Image (cartoon, rainbow, N blue to C red; front, side, top):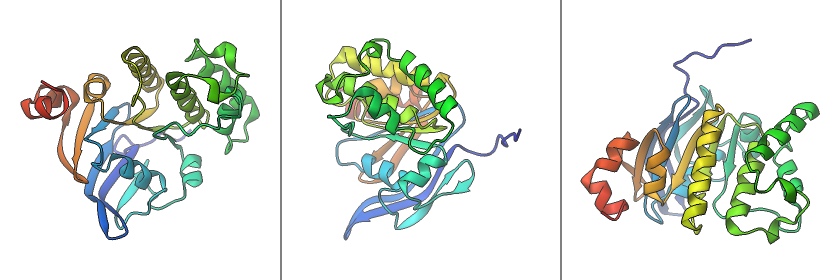
Length: 243
């Protein structure tokens, strides 16, 4: 059994820049995710949060900088290779296959795995996180509510057995009670040993469950601290918490 050095970070982003055509989207972004953490990235719509997720997971090619996963240089690798290296994404908008069942959507999350017995064990474990849905595995995903579809999207991502999970706006458009449920699920996943980067416009919820936080404005990191400290900042309260 190989024991990882405690100095090796699950995710390390250094000097990352990206653009769409001639329009800069990210500017020299530094971000780290340490073992056992929930780190949140908050910012207004259009700040570059989703672009950062896409640049990390290989959907957008950076113009500068690097991404390291458990110490390994992975900048620009394709999304399917990133999944095989232990990184999974819950995309904004869920991106389920509506004509496929909940179970079929979840099974797609394990496309890169060949350990059938372990996949079956993980399927049972992941389903146990969503007791409200366990009796609807054969139901088409498109017939679920928005909050339920978000749960399925999270379940699908977990089926790849990720060590790092990126969540892009998982609570957007959801009712407050469902937001609380999603936050609870994210916390449970973190407690199971998955390292989490949570991208959110809902700063109140994100800061309540995160260990550390970054603020992204205009494609650049403008603040970094513990989630508690940023939640107590008057500037953050005015800009993101409506206080």
